[in-house]
Image (cartoon, rainbow, N blue to C red; front, top):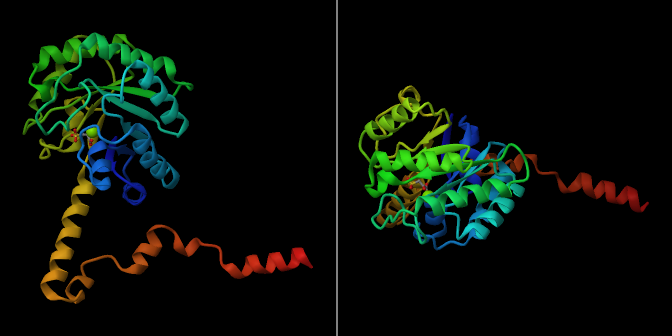
Length: 280
Ligand code: SPV
Ligand code: MG
């Protein structure tokens, strides 16, 4: 399964149109699109609003990146109820302390594993339906705590009821996540395992599958593409004092109409006709 990181309705539509299997409602993308750092500064409901906008325009399953759960076990339970009610397929909770920092920055203090396991158990206890999934995200490799720590935590989080694991790494190759998967298998543990190949991007999804990934998440590529494309076009307009040179490089206005189904709008006139009939 390939999930792609999306940050708004448009990117959700594009991910679906391009045949991805699931949406990763990623904090980095949503925060960046909002204009704030990915550092726990957006409220739970601001993230939920972003997810609801995706839900309304795409039928793909949504995995919501809910950072460290926005608070203690009670907050986690409310979070699960709100996100599940909004039609989210899974929440992914990471074992970092609040306020979390993006995993590619410093300051990634790990949560006590017992405290985090309680959050997972609380999340599972709060879900209403059978299909909702709680993904426990392991940040041991990001925080420099090593594979043994990641494996011990994985066991504790699975005991607490986690439906899947996400093992995050910022190594340039998938050696860490591959070894994690192998050692998990050696322990006889069979559980869906997600990977985010942002830094080990040379490894294909098929190869990651062979290493043990059940899903790969391209977490931030649409927002990075958008940032570069918008900056380049604005530079060109500044440089040329006209938009002519960018016209052939950017989407047309018709492309915008088309991607959000403007052609499917109901015309005014048939409705006016109906109203006239009703009032006759
Ligand atoms: C995100 O997309 O917000 C993530 C993944 O949490 S990462 O940025 O790699 O930490
Ligand atoms: Mg995140």
